[in-house]
Length: 468
Image (cartoon, rainbow, N blue to C red; front, side, top):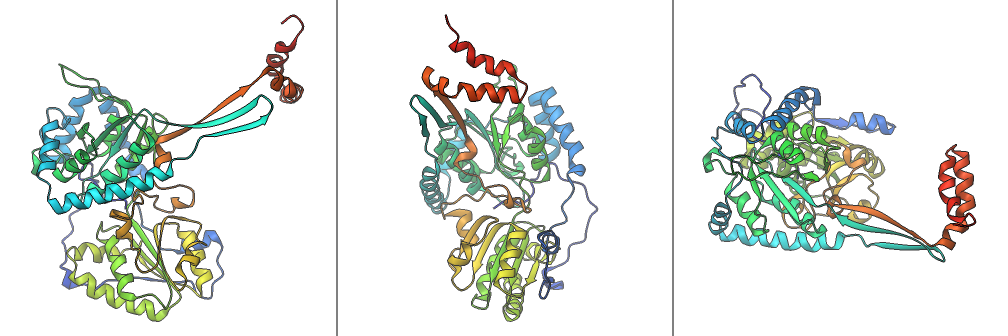
């Protein structure tokens, strides 16, 4: 579940007169692939995609923000809080009493739901940690790999059109499971809450034992995490981190790309997306409900149905009209479903449908077909796969135990969702005895000569010269 744009650092655009939900219907477009034999490149071009704002549009603004944070520290952060969030800020650190107050004031039903989500996420994350490995390559020749957590991470939870305590869980739980000892969290300041992040965000952090929380939004939060902010006049510093994770808008994604190499990042996530592979056995009402559930995130959210059933496609369109009209965020949903990033993809059969899914490489992919588990096992490219009628994406967003910070925009073809290994490093340990080294010394000398690096070989033979 990547999220809607943050309130901070929005691109400027001309005012648009909103239309009422009743004034237009869902324009869920059709991409007809039937009877066409397409290459992978052609399939990638054919499937619906958002017309994203280009990185170049955001890069200069983000570069300026990063430079300001590095040069002016907390003063720059205060300026950005005023400019982007309408908040007067003395220091962005959230007081401990505000965290406790947010937890004390949390709705009991929401607290219970968060605790259940945390419990399930912890069980799955604990099972993800890879084992250390020792491999014996001969008498006295051992090569090992051990997994070591990074020392400190910065976790970003966006603001925008909704509130995301679930993203606190999805970021924090795998970091804790990895053994990270220092965790800082940032979320945009909210004018309605006295310049602090939303209280439900603070409560979720408190539930997880995170007491280092900052009211910082957008690209400036990423810059502060990457480079740190020195303290001044008795104020606490914000120490730099080793890894930054968490979703956000194009400015957050651009900032993460620009600081990559200074710190590790999880991914450059974009707006949320769902694809559903369905055949004639699927229930149109379920399919439509799931498409709508992701469309309500943002007007640019992508909802795609891939099917070989014309009847199902027609029934889903009807359901989108009916359910879309009655949902709370109907105008946002209609805009998302009517955008170029959404629509129905018609295919000849299941084989072409699977190929279209792999070309699309969805953040969330639902399988609603006969023998859904078997079909799911054939999918190569997806952030997360939801199998059958009773595994909707909403389950993964909150209580499945899986992580909802997932690759978007086709990047699931080569990257993974947030998990424990995001916060771990694999360190190789080489331990050879004298006799074990001597066994391969000739090979080392031969290879060093072949690469014209004779000193490499000399470093070995020096250990076996007479009189050593």
